[in-house]
Image 1: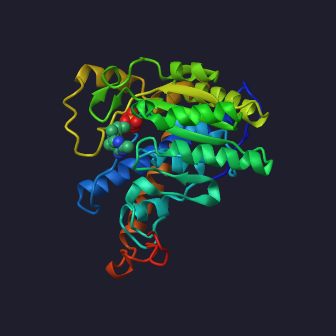
Image 2: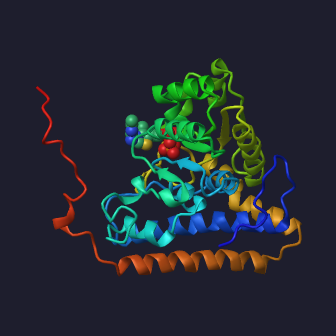
Amino acid sequence: MTKPNSPTAAMVELSREHQLHLFEVMHRIRAFENSGARALAQGLLSGTLHLSVGQEAVAAGVCDTLRTDDYVASTHRGHGHCLAKGADPRRMMAELFGAEDGYCRGRSGSMHIADSAVGILGANGIVGGGFGMATGAALSAQVRGTDQVSVVFFGEGAAGEGALHEALNLGALWRLPIVFVCENNGYAELSPISEVLATSRVADLAAPFGIPADTYDGNDVEIVVQQTLAALARARRGDGPSLLEFETYRQSGHFEGDGQRYRTKAERAAWAERDPLLMMRRRLGALGVTAGELDSIEAVAQTEMAGAVEWSAGRRPASEASLTEDVYADAGSNHG
Ligand SMILES: Cc1ncc(C[n+]2csc(CCOP(=O)(O)OP(=O)(O)O)c2C)c(N)n1
């Protein structure tokens, strides 16, 4: 998959081709997750999945602006971040299937997918676990004198974690090339933001550190691209961190199987109208792209991800005998 018009400056006009590319990336994310969810419902996978259906514009828009050697620290809801940053969907799907060909040889499931070849530091089962890793990666880029940037995705539920405030402090103090990207989907597990955070705006939390921050529409992929470009330019110039809060909505449950009794049908229906894929479809339609062209992009994405499922289902499962491989124990040192 090529990346047309890889942008390098802030506030560029996105070409029609570029917008079509973003539409394709968002559809690939949705198709991957829907395919995984179907496989789970069919009993082909164990455990559960945390889907990001409805949030694709943030992953696609942010990662679109990044270079392969930039870093991304993801979350427990990280399929979109990993795919958009360049992970291989077959190896991702194989990991969900617990197969040896998966990213972690089938031992982790979706919450620990990492790919250092494309700068993915890892999805993370620990809420707020990415802050320290991304800060460290940004420090490493600064020490090595490269212009790489480190991006950390987090949910508004992670904004109450001390690790965010430590990372904001060090990022500002050392002017690190890091961008904090909050995907504010309104709920932390089953709790609305009003019950878990003392402010309604995560962006407010950056003010004491002198870090520029604002809140934007996270379902409009073009806005996500433009704002990330500005934050990246600042980081690459050596001017330090930014915090971008993107408001979005998780259309799926917190996990597959979540009864979702904590929110109303009316709320879900209103956000479904603002589905980022639908919004992009309308925009491209207004630019003269035909419904047939858009449908075929969607169909190609679905075929690709159905292929990833088929491939993964045929892979060898991780063997029980291999489970203790790569587990380290410090047996030699004297802790007395
Ligand atoms: C340190 C830690 N505390 C609690 C949990 C349990 N947990 C898993 S997801 C989640 C909510 C996270 O909410 P948010 O950061 O807003 O992300 P979202 O699920 O909305 O994408 C919690 C509390 C965890 N995995 N790690």
